[in-house]
Structures are given as C-alpha cells and as structure tokens.
Length: 372
Image 1 (cartoon, helix red, strand yellow):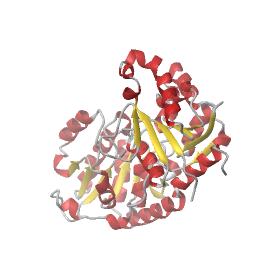
Image 2 (cartoon, one colour):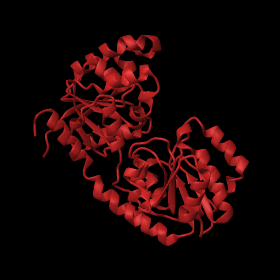
Image 3 (cartoon, one colour):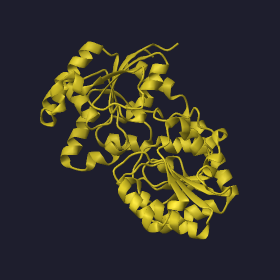
C-alpha cells in the first residue's frame, strides 16, 4: 500500500478535470482538500474537503480587495489543514496566488492554454506566470504533454523536475463496447447515418464555425453525414446557432449537453470525431475518443500531433482551412475500412501510453517528500 498523503489542491473546482485529479487521489485513500473560488455543481467533488475562497475571508468577494486578502487567507488555510503537499493547478490566478503565499511543499501543474498562450498575452501576464511557475520553490511539475513542458520551461521551470502524468482523463468506462447506435435512431436519423462527433465547447478558439462550414460542404457530397455536438458551455453559442441556421443544418445535427455517465456511450457510437482547437494539451476528450476506437480529424496544434498524425489514427489539418477539413471529413466518411484501421490504432496507442496516473501522482508526491 502506498503512503497516505494529505494533499491541498488549489485550482478551479468547477473544472471536471480538476475534480478528476481530486477524486483519483481520494479514491485511493488520500485526504484531499481543494481551495477555489468556484465549485463544481454536479456533485463531482462529493467526499472532497472543499474550501471556498469566499468562506476563508468574506472580503475575497470584493475584486479590488482580493489581491490584498488572498495571500493571508491561503496562509491561514494551510496552517489549519497542514497538508503534506500543496499542488497548484493553472498558473493564473491559482498558481500565482499559491506562489505569492509561499505555500509548500509545492508541486505545480500549468495547464494547456494558460502556459502555452495566456502567459504570453502581455508583459504583466508573463510576469505573473513566471511567479506562478515558482522555479526556486517548486519541487516537481506535473504536465500532460511535451508541448506544455516546453512552454513551462520557457517560463523558467527546471526541465529535470518534470513528470508526464495523464491524470486529467479517465479511460475506465471508455471502450468500443459502449457503442449504442440506437441513440442516433432516437434522434430521427437513418440507420445508415455516418455520425461526426464534436466534443468541444462554445469558445472562439475551438473553431466550431470551421467545423460547421466543412460539415455543410461535406454533406452535399455524402448526404448520410450527421453531426452530433456535446458542447455544454461557453460564450459563443449564439454565433454557433446563427451559423447553423444560415447553413440550413438543423435537420442534420444535434447539440446536447451530455451527462458524464453517458459520454462513453455517445463517444463510442460515433463514426469519427473532429477537434480543431487552437491550443490544447493532450485533451481528455481526445484520449477518451481514442479509447473508444474512434478515428479523428484534428487541427494542427501544440500536443495534438503527439497523439495523432496523418495516416496514424486520423487526419491532421490546418485548423482554419475549411477546404482541408472538408476533405478530411469526406475521406473518413467514404471509407469505413480506413475508419476501422484508424480506430484500432488509436485504441492500441492510448492504452499503451496511458499507464496508471494515480500511482504516478503518488510517486511524484512521495519523491517530493523524500519517501522513495
């Protein structure tokens, strides 16, 4: 049995990925605390000790005062919880506040967009990100892609301290056996429908407008094509819906906020999936799609080609190139044998590389505390 740790995670507790990190460790017997300004409303942190910033200090509700009150509030929390390890998730604002408070023993996890894009938006953002990396104090870094490691090293992190752990994805439950094609019939789609799956939310950098235009063009040549989107949040939904109407796609697509328990079945039931995000770091949806034996069309972006290359599990395209995306969709739609071979490759690849993320996290913490 591994050592049991008391761990304090500081991050966005509304994030399903952050909840997965916490639950992995709690399920293995560790005492997990999380500190955040937001809380996941779906019950995904049941059994986790949740400390809301607003409850640590009521004045943290006031934006102007937050910058002065956050450090002492976190310091008091650590004094009360007395964690073995503090693990900060995201660089801004959570990692920045953690570093400013001088908390530790410290493990840092930059996430995809905040290290690869957001840190370089302005001199102020870069300075805050470099503080959050805490190069003088961080004892280890946990990332999920080479692209993310490279971005963190550019910010000052020591490459020798990095650990590659795919903690944010849960492959258990995702498998080809979860396929249930009857769900497409329930939408009124024909038995021979060729279903294209999109798992990205309504955000500018997910390029859903490109997907819609490419799907519309491809469906003119392959009428059996249908599009299913599980987007559940984001701030560009109105633009998305307007473009759907302009392209006349309503009869040929569906948008549903799919509960987590149903996602494995939805994913495995698709014929192929498309993701065109500008930036990402081994996204959980990508790995779960691969574990469902589903081929992919992916936009060229940091970390994506660490998993998919053209001819190896899918097709890689320029993210904003509608014609290229259309051609890739048509290539997969017209060739069921190609879809099968790509899907089989993805299933093998993701399981060969996934490992045991919970055990890997435990090894990181044990190493930080000198218990290995």
